Length: 139
Image (tube, rainbow, N blue to C red):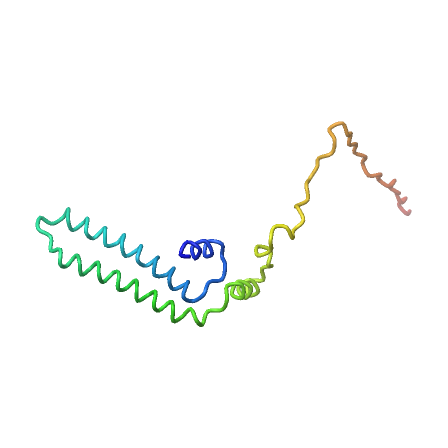
């Protein structure tokens, strides 16, 4: 089921508020884990006797903040329009067609340019110049 959420999100499908909040939680925990790992590594190599209690507090705070952002996303996601409506509204504001959201089978293939055969001879004929009329000077 969890992998299904990731594949739906990757496909651009509309997700429920709970699914969106779960994805935000996973994203936040990954970022918190990477940031915490950097703090642990830098603390371990830069100090002769690191205070691991402080490092643990920093790590716990990072994960708590990520969880709080996911909870906030859950609360705000209930007011979000469905994905298709949001995309259509944004496209309408920008004056963009719905070309990207159509299935590939509904479009005709692009026209193919074919060059004329190589044995075709093209000739140029200059435009005919009208004869000039001269007016005799009056005496």
